[in-house]
Length: 506
Ligand SMILES: [Zn+2]
Image (cartoon, rainbow, N blue to C red; front, side):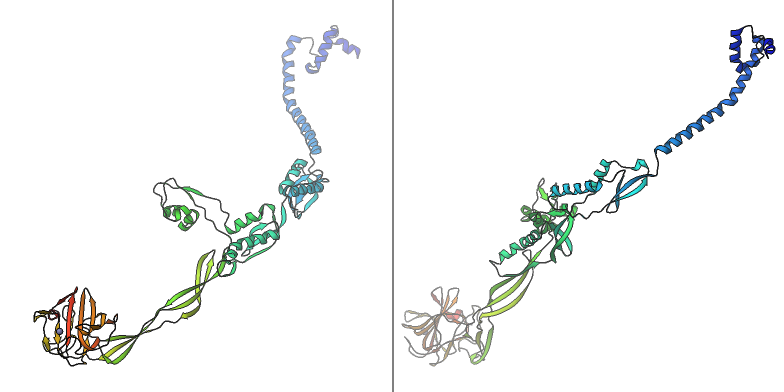
């Protein structure tokens, strides 16, 4: 072996030989003697070798790294780690690594909530803890779980519900409070009882109270519950009147009834006048309960009388006589008025009692045809334009005018004693008695300053104050007073002065 080594020309240069040797790994042996010449092929060969080997090494390294990494990953994040799923009423609120303290924590949270609201909670939430296998990254911290427990902790309490038509309307803390609310709602109507005859005060709706388990947030103080129940609890909505607005347009645009605007704005309701810039309350208050009651009203009413007409064949058909004066009677009417919140919705008469009966008016009406014969001078009956008619029929024996130096203020109609004398025109008897010169006299006032005189009668048949119609029997003629024979002295006076009756008679 040595001689072989001796053959090698590298030996003498020991240091260089070593260097060469060390680098001979790449250069290869036997190439030493001719360094410059042998360099080119020597350099090229190693280059080719590297190109083939490097990728292979990288792949190996990568595989190694990945294998190591994957194994490490697998070791650190085991998807099958054991943790505890926390459920509240069956709903998952998180997964924790250690659940041993949770039941106590939950109890503490409930205690705190109770202290907070001051009312015992209905502890009906079920906390369930179940072991599960989860990815570690899905495990929540204890703080997160506590926060979730707090968030989903309900505040259910036992309270008293006021139900209106089966719907839970308001909730009070106690049954006493609920009863107070209902009594308070009826109270104003109970008050009316002291002044009026009121009965059957009750809610229009089916209203009842019963225990309820609700969130404490629904529980109202009794005064608040009363307001909600009777006044409504809507938020106030304000509106500022703009130019061109009318109550009608505001109602239309805001989907509200005009009556509701009037109700919420008493200052508008009287006149319906609104001004630009004025603020209106557009709140619609819808009370949950309405109170109905029945008010009994008693009133007195007049009873009108009837008029009965009786036929009387002793009188002329132009004559009428009141036999019985009519009298207005009185009756009591009892009405039951049903009101809701004080507003009448219906009424019915339940009783009618006559307190004073009405007295019918009875009038006698003549059936006899009036005499057709008329004073000879008159040429017939009938009525003049002035409305006067002849008082009786007979020859005219003396006319109106100056006679023997004196004024004869009327006309004389010669008739036998006892002949009927009738009213010349309808009017009122203003005198019926003895008058100097006239004897038994009847004066009838016809209005408009017109008065007629019927003198020298034998019998007077009417009294002062009696209303007479034209043609009505006044008296029977005669020869009383300053008279020279039986006749009817007839005068017409206008505004106190005698006029010639012939100008007025038909
Ligand atoms: Zn005369």
